[in-house]
Length: 329
Image 1 (tube, one colour):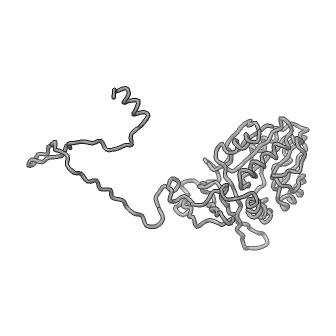
Image 2 (tube, rainbow, N blue to C red):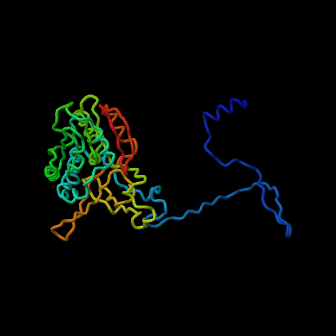
Image 3 (cartoon, one colour):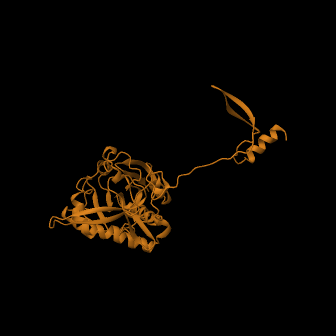
């Protein structure tokens, strides 16, 4: 075969890497105190590989890259039906917020600066909706606009009334508002509580439905990539105890799936997680721990869902451990 054809054949049909065959070896030779090299004919050679068999769990220093230390739980999208998803969210989102509403509200008293900036830039005369408004902390920030909120938690909506905020109990997957009736929407830290992609899409579709043509919305979701965030402990404060996330720290959320319980102020190792909340009561010295479901978004995931819903992305940014996107209808 000519050299050109051999080169083409090598590109089309690459060989499996092998040891190049040889008939001789260069080996050290000793003549008294003098060391030299000599050429000798190759005979039978034996190659030995020694492996160390580990007993028990791997304890290497690279848990994020080690397959053995990754949680072996199934992805929710593969095992949870829409009916089971509703049950999961009802137990690990809706019912939890009803229980922790007062304590949760006490920790949510100030709007995030970039959310406040978005609201303050809205021109007078617009209709503004806060989907998942919680205690209403993000409302009454515009000038000359009609503002209202909605939330799935009855107890949080009751707290809104104490702030003189217009709010109704509503499911973000079925907003009780006419199509193309809202000029601006904010949805802060809500969609990450939807447990399947179909339900996350539906939540964004509902926002798009109620927006007027050219209307805008601001969406915040928790980010898988936390980066530099107040939420994450500095490396100097990390210990081997809070770095390691054992598979035993998980809860069975349905017949076919368990979810890991996230250790507060550490990085995420899985997108579908349960986050503990310790409820403190003024009336009792006892505390109560409950768990909220989260789907933490990877970079570009929120934008991908928005584009599937026909939304136009105006801007995207990372803000204190959240992926944030401004969209236009």
